[in-house]
Length: 605
Image (tube, rainbow, N blue to C red; front, side, top):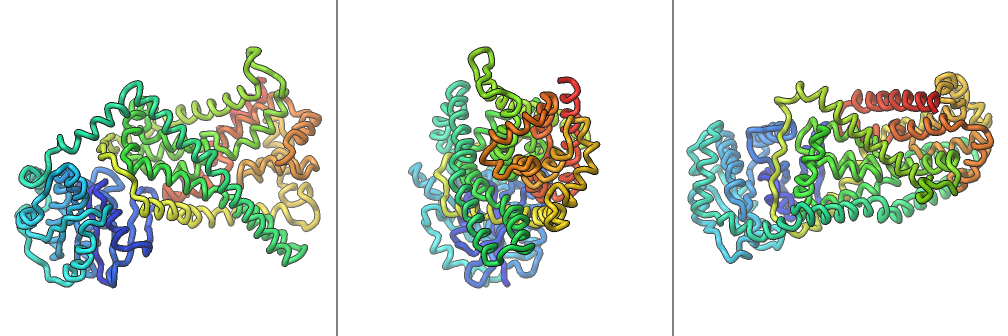
């Protein structure tokens, strides 16, 4: 199939134009370990490939290196017939540096080039115009002025595309050769001076808003309000969707198992498939809500400002200003937070952020915290005679997780800084213009985030669920205590004795690897109590009567703050880093650290 390649710098409206050309006929390809995504779609009989936004063919990061490498291969491919360079009409100079490099690359490979002067509506809103015909003569290639947002000029461009693809390569007016970086910058500056609009016109309205949003006092208040909105959207407003998903999975499970009747097949579907794999599907709405809110912040231009506000304090711990949102959203769920770390420009800081996100106390830990806090602290106890002691304990657990994340990120930064200092990306930030979000591509991005999550995490979760279910089910009818999993629990009991725990807690900890909240139900089964998730107070009373010591209880709480007891998070880390050893190494590392902290607490307290 003949191919059209779409390129441009970030924030030039390229993806919106791609969406207008291809509609819903799109696919996304990821490269593990980086944030590079190639989107492909179909326009008439042509394949359209949307490359990630890049500032230069001289890459500064691993992400840009891969993007440039794939672009070189695409332009060299005989299937590629046309290269479309998208220019930001309001910021012409920055767009032209990369566009001129691409034009030289296309000429070297004997490929036709066409320039799209996008966001022409913004230029006209300032009461200005750009002479597209004169710019076309200077570049020696067709130039189409349009607005992918308002659709101004889009239909004309669509109608012209087939003819542009079919034409033979038109000699351009460019005399600069690839590698002459300084000359590309000089030529872009000349063309912008002749045809572009003045930057002070563009910055006038932007600076007026920035004086408020980047103000030391008012900007901080606005930042906290926006972050509170983000947190509420993930933690609270996604809950009805999550409850609906959980109810739908439960209904499907009861319907299917009802058809099968009692037996091993029904137990397998109910516990391993719907109970194991189905449990992680509950998080899909949360991921999609997070993607929607972050997309709105990104498209509007605020996300770059938030990164700027947070960069200085977070850089003390080896993090980036962009690490704040992943850390914040990690208190709802680590999985969407790890995906949100894609916005971090430095590969090293992105990796440090992803590896420390699991230390944020996610919502799945809440049932564990609620149970153990109820066991250890009376409901009427107060702190300093004013504050509820159980509430203070919850705050302490969340605060401990944040402190641990900052400590671990500092250590990771110290050990990796020298090795990666030369290859690390500096904190370079372009403050884009304030714009209203483009809803159609944003909603498609939201849908893609849910689909990509399922594709990446489902296989790993299915394998682990199958293994745990098999161990807990056989010998058939023996009960959990006498199952293979129970026997393993008795076998590993000496491992948990230093923590002041017996085999029942060991089995519950093992089973909670599927999801931390499974700990409550598994422990309820160990104590002969069904429906423990809905009767935490009753289970807490049984545990108290059984004699769980204060040190062992606090140690167990701290264990769940630190330990990476979540197979979905491990699967997401493996998908994002592209390396199994990193994901499973982190699981083992946090497990050992959590064990040592719990053992220390059990012996000291």
